Figure 1 (cartoon, rainbow over the protein chains, first blue to last red):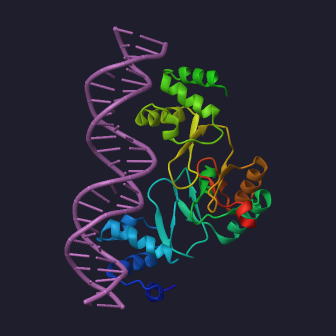
Figure 2 (cartoon, rainbow over the protein chains, first blue to last red):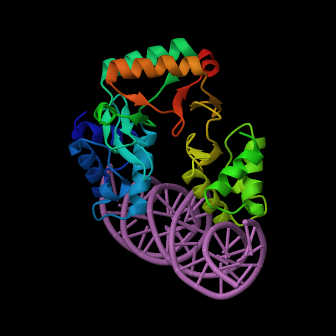
Length: 132
Length: 132
DNA sequence: TTCGATGCAAATAGTTTGCATTCTA
DNA sequence: TAGAATGCAAACTATTTGCATCGAA
């Protein structure tokens, strides 16, 4: 979803396109990873930024992720299917779709549980850290 | 591990068995689920309770879990192999060992990742909520 | 009687809320 | 120009830290 399209969605919900709102969406669009409210504020007031993120989340454009300890992070919805965070090296990486399917399937079949790694990351030890 | 054994471990690390310390361990021993620092304080000072939980964690007797949003929760180490939290009904339940093995295996084989659901719960939709 | 543990107060991080002012549509 | 969005200040939740006092060994 391009920024202009995102802005149209904002308008279609009766919300206004303010400078702060636009800049949050542009920053999220440009980012390759989820960013904190502070990183997204970019000069704007933090409280307003949180309010903007909340309303953008309420209309489904944005979602927040918890990658581990520390502040919540925000990304455009649909950008990623899930996240993993290594508790040894601290790195967070998107979960490749095939891996996600396999884990989902196992959780569904073994526990009747449908995992969602878009909101809380899958925590553990990554391949590199397991090897060393 | 019984409470007297836990207290011996405390002593063996050169730490003292204070009333507050004993009562935290007794509360954790009696609990069937992870409790918050506030719930564990039981009249004692919150700051001291956090300090106690931290030192008990540092000698491996206690661990803290994040089941979802909200305060961290504490339990005796080794009590559970992992947790799931349903984002619809909010309930948290221990992950049965066989299910854990299956999910672990899938994550290892599909992503080379070794999950740990003792620190951050596996989040998603539980069997009951998926059905309705 | 010593040094670890406690309580109290204050600081900190992350996030939310109230309210007067500003700006988009 | 109406009402949504903003900035600023203050409140709030979860947790940590400093320091004088207390208590377990």
